[in-house]
Amino acid sequence: MNTKKNILFKWFQSWSTKLVLSSVLTFTVFGASLMGWQPEASAILAQGDAVTDPQAILRYSLPIENDSVRKLQKSLEDISNQLRAKRWSNISRDLKDASRVLSARRDKLLATIPEERQPQAKSVIEQLASGTEELKEIVAAKDREGTYLKRRELLDLVTDLEQSMVVGYPFEVPEEYANLPQLLGRATVEMETNKGNLKVVVDGYSAPVNGGNFIDLVERGFYDGLDFNRAEDFYILQAGDPPGDADGFIDPKTNEYRAIPMEVLVKGDELPVYGDTLEELGRYLDQPAIPFNAYGAIALARPANDPNGGSSQFFFFKFDTEITPPGYNLMDGRYSVFGYLVEGKEVLEELTEGDKIISAKVIDGIDNLKEPV
Image (tube, rainbow, N blue to C red; front, top):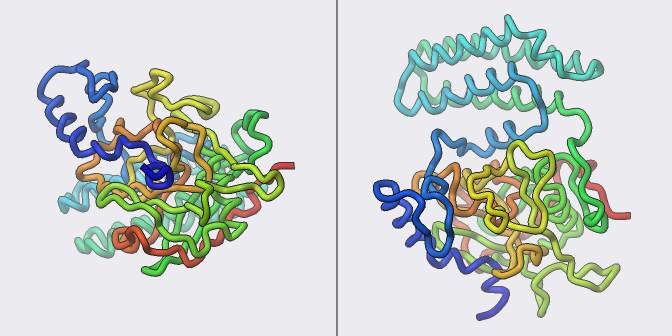
């Protein structure tokens, strides 16, 4: 089989079989083997209320410690869940919780924000407080669309507030990867395709090497004009295969293939895991900070037998969360997620093999890219 067509693990070919099997295991024995993989059956099933909103995942993965802002965030995010069932009283309760944080815990919200950022942070908190009162009136009128839009506006402000709490970079990337670009923060990429535009947030806080590689290649114009070279309906959409015999990026400085390592930051760990999949390390139940829970997760493609052989090829994960087990699913820890699609879901749904990336450009966060010396 052509290497380029097989750059993702052959595991995808039996995905549907595994989903059926995982459903059966729900009602049968725990601890059974799964197609040669040996975790507890509970490790392949949804665990509780997994977060499936990419923006929410990105908020939770910011390297901050402020319980008050997390409580505020959770209250506003819960509105979406309640809105689906029109539980207006529960939404009102969420808004009371949010208001309580914004008033009684204001000092705690500001406590972890550097002094030079305090004036802007205070302004954001004022906007949140007034916006929450406006949302209460919208909820009282049982305006579903208005509630959804105002909630999204408030959560954007929460994102601004949380980002103001980030101080420095949380860890040092191992010296052995100093020859590779690193993204020490976040960056946003706008990708123009023949069917519309996609916007992706790349998270260097969780995947600095994989994220740095992608942003560096975007800046070089590497992806401009490339086709989407592989598509599996309801599975993946892959791109980044350059013309010619090479399966990835050939660095013009060295004339060598730029290989990118497996990189997964596990919740609670101080550093990402490099070089091995979580499966290989026996860490079946560990949760990545940025998992495959959300439609449009973007990850590094790689050869089937080499977790450190990826380069320029990447893929969008297209499973809908209604049928993909969120939480501990079968993809987490096997591939390096480095960001999420945040705008353009309807475009991604239409893209397939043979469609084209017209251009890709970094529209925010380029200052966070650290090029190798």
